[in-house]
Image (cartoon, rainbow, N blue to C red):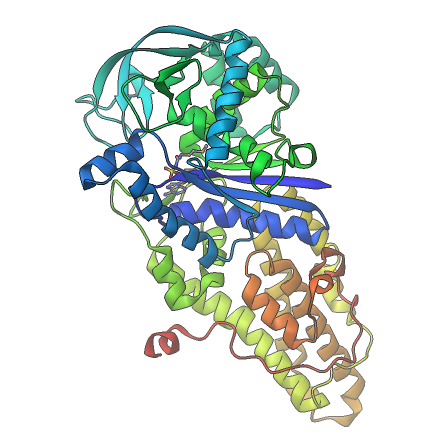
Length: 508
Ligand code: MSP
């Protein structure tokens, strides 16, 4: 089955930070997991390059918006690559094909009579590229997100008849209660709709940097209309041909909670207006916080993903994001927390377990995984583990899935080694069969957890699998993530520490 997953597209007005990396890694985890299930995946990410957010920074820096975008897009592309993300296309909203497709889509909405000309007056935050209601403003007319003083603007522009879709949107929410998740976000979006929808402006008369309105060349589209459409236009040209028939609609769209209203209200209305099928599901995650505040470029409290990757490797970063903060909720990250998890969980519980298992197979069985019966004791935790992970990831519960792999898999195996003490069994020839069973159980155990962990930590898990003689696509298939699906008999290879101790990393 086709599975289309998207991330928001990132503003190119500054360098990427961990907040951007977060959604992209989450989408990659889901994409990789779905491929393990044999799904035909299309994974899209990219950059949002038009509008005030970019034009303003460009002006401040004395370059054209195009120059700024060309300069900064490089960092976002590098980020995706260094995060080991397997996106099928990287869209830039300045791609001429995207611009043309936006014009056609919006013309369709216009032709169906959902767009009219009017005057707009309201409080506008240029960083959000969004209007704020009086109630939302902080004292002193400040933007609640960026904490800067914002101004009231009045302008003539084109409006989208959002109000006309009130009934249809309410029906959507009633008929498809899982279309927006988690529940708290569904409720938030629904209550916004029930509060009464006002028409929204789709164009900007003063701005030059954007996609021209086809029926009024003096104006450009409001950046959000151009941006939201990326999810649709990318399929028209991204892979070199139009793949909408295969991949539309998206199976999953991942976003942060700050952009809920655009995705859960305006976006479906735009699609309804043009009679295009709606995405199957939106999943909204929370914020990564540092020192209690949202990590953000404007506030300057950011963690640089590149630095973390340089020191600890990309797998550790990918793991930490979903282990530390329950996916869907806000949560704090810190260097201390990162180091603690790196040392105890990655270096010890997973890395050491792998090294010890391989070393024991080497020492006691000449490097060949014994052919033996599976130890029954591991069954309780391992039976059904892959199914549980699958169910959690179907619900986009990235943290629960990881928690399950860790507690039922990795930690269970650590206890098993201690209980069985293979080094004692090895001293007693009468225990040879038991030692075979224990070593086979451990080899299978670390293989199964590595298959399940692969979407989170592709490099470390693949290295471990390779050391167990498991290479190539089939070895990652989820159907092989059960104890005993690979028989003994293979020769184990050498494995450098998966997660070298931090002191060692720093010394190097
Ligand atoms: N360009 C728009 C999105 C258009 S999508 C059609 C935009 N860009 S952004 O670069 O400001 O943010 C993109 C995403 O990054 C948002 O989903 C936002 O929630 C996420 N994050 C930015 N900072 C974040 C954290 N500190 N924590 C988690 N995610 C955050 O909005």
